[in-house]
Image (cartoon, one colour):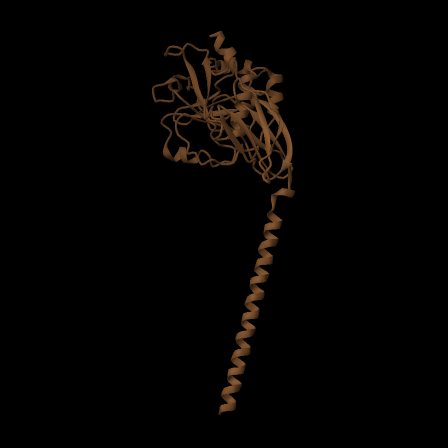
Length: 325
């Protein structure tokens, strides 16, 4: 019996030792796997190109690369205001900085889609840019205009494209061609044929969702598929149902980048002519495909004479525009 007990003790000791060895091996293997995963995810060896765009109205930006291994920073270049752009070749995980209004702002560019450039909008402490679009038709309110607050960090690519189009005078003379009460107002097909064809080929990538819930007056680019945004935008009408509001943003290209200041029920949106209804196939209003034709605005004048138009759009904070007013 003593021999059996001794044998049993020896077997138990061997079993325990084997399990300790297996556990240690398992921990080592897990540590090696984790180290391998970290090495695979280490960003320093993943190259990318970042487009930095300075949307400040009047101030240039000195962009610096931050050395994360020391306190050094290296000047990349100076970026001019009002949409000035700079492409920088760097690596995922590298940080940049710039100073504005006495504060240093640090930027970590997002990793781009494969084969694409990363994009960073630089606006310093500005969380809003005002754009005013004056309307042509004599509506039943004094000084009819759309007062737009562009939020640069909600959807940076969309905000930057809209400001670029405004600076280029793209929306001047544009028809408010899709107006549906309690739904939306849509516009953005240029009057000049060459201009609309040029910009129609310059689509931008979708912005990452920012989880902003659409509400009346919210503004987004329209599109017809991922990465399809060009020039057409829509404004959510007052009175849109909650179900409709919830449906905005379901598509990847529908990311709000601005909102209308005067979006109340009895404001300018309610005065824009909506008698033609929605576009085909949902209604008998202006057909966007026909507007894109060379004689598109003749088509609008002949078939839809009561449409409202934008006289001009401009960025309120840009000094030379303000001096003219």
